[in-house]
Length: 50
Picture 1: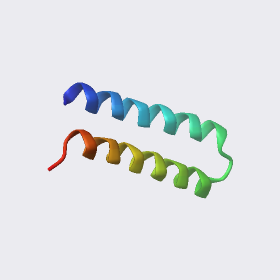
Picture 2: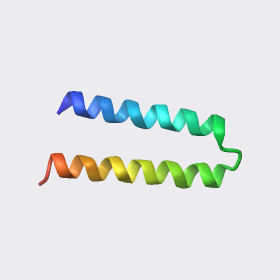
Picture 3: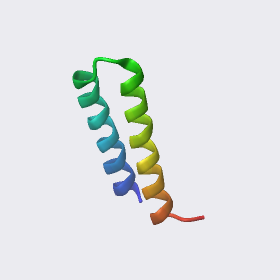
């Protein structure tokens, strides 16, 4: 679990940093980041269901 968690967190951080460089509009950037986080949370739920 720790490895998957670290990899997922790293992917989110990398994508967020790339979006900060690419996106000119903060609202657009926030929407993309939220979508990215929701996708990764969904992946986590599939791997580690309750």
